[in-house]
Image (cartoon, rainbow, N blue to C red; front, side):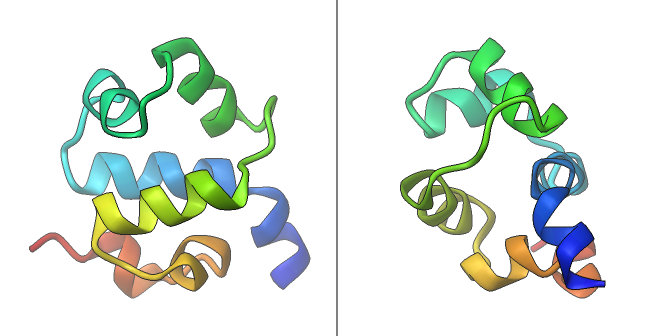
Length: 79
């Protein structure tokens, strides 16, 4: 259900990043954060702030809801 998706939004970020063939280094630069910090977000060791969610939605060309709600169509959508 939704609870698990929200808890796992870091893995959503990882799936969306990989679907778009973006490296952690490139994404971390786009988000203006260190690569280890991004890795922690993707692994769920660090919570994702609203500011980062908004930046991710911009980079991934999707909505914040798509990232939060595990929207499979958006995860797979490349261009």
